[in-house]
Amino acid sequence: MNSMNSDIPFDLIQERTGVPSSRLKVAFARGSLRLLESAGMQALLFKKPLGDLEAGTVIYLGDETEVIRGFPKIRRTLLLSPTIQEHFRDRVAVEEKMNGYNVRIACLSSGETVALTRGGHVCPFTTRKAQELLDLSEFFREHPDLVICGEMIGRDNPYVSQDYPEVGPLGFRVFDLREKNTNRPLPVEERRALLDSYGLPNVRLFGVYPIEEAASEVADIIRALGMAGREGVVMKDPSMEVPPLKYTSSQAHARELAYAFSYPFDFGRPFFFSRVIREGFQAYELDESDDETRERARRLGEAIIYPMLERIKSISAGEAAYEDTVIDVEDREAAEEFIRHLVRLGVSATLADYRDGRATIRRFYQSTTDRINNYLKGGLY
Image 1 (cartoon, rainbow, N blue to C red):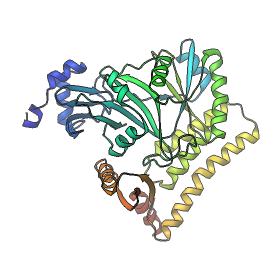
Image 2 (image 1 turned 90 degrees about the vertical axis):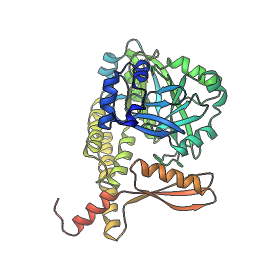
Image 3 (image 1 turned 135 degrees about the vertical axis):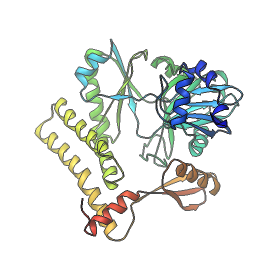
Image 4 (image 1 turned 135 degrees about the horizontal axis):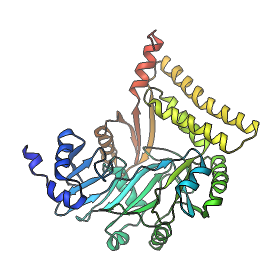
């Protein structure tokens, strides 16, 4: 056992998590459990699930050993009617699924508030913005054992940019409150009431429906969300004793495909295939007219062909495949700190411009640039 390994309190972590210390040591040796510096202290990051611990779980090894559990993966349904009947018990709470990035906000025993991205890394930009957007001090003073799980949304979003008129450039909506060690979620109504009492913003609740009515209600909600350019819904057992399910609009699928086909060699084939499959099952279940199905097919085809064609044209003209995002930062150092964070995560990014608190983050998609250039020169596929 090397010295770094011997400094890790595996037995204490076993007591806190229930995962045998022997399994923790094997995971550490294999690299799926990593020791890193986070929030000014040593922490263990779970790159993969282990026992009951989700990927993205972070265990802080400060004066107290604190477990911030990863956010559980939410399964998707392709068909509403049979799945709702099979999966849920008597009622279904339907909340909006927003298009941003998943964030867990926690207050550590050191008193520091951190914002963790899905993978378990503290994002400096998100940590600052969460505390600007939300008044968290009283909530965490009275509920230090709870983790706020939500979505960072808005057009000035360095990860997933979509305009939500009601939030302005950047906003946050909470969709879950969970206990630190157990990851137990609060029931929907209890969570919404607690957040309201502190002035913290919940995601939109469309209603709580009997399971006999939920499928048709969700279908109507999805049609309206799609027409409004919004993403979809998350269906939840009001008591949160049954895992939630998600369901998204056709327009959201097309938007994601258009983005991915702008950088076709930087996204895996499962990304494309899963969204096309969703479209087929949704068209089947919603019992569309011929004109509606034709519009769906047109939307899907245009989302695939036009972005890819534009990318091929731009690279043939000598450009590289990149994406620029403009974000608000305190100063140039904050922008450069965010770039360092992205680079640590393996993202090829640079600070393209900085003026008066506005930083242009340029992210490069090298595989798309290299492979399209290769094919344009006669390379074989």
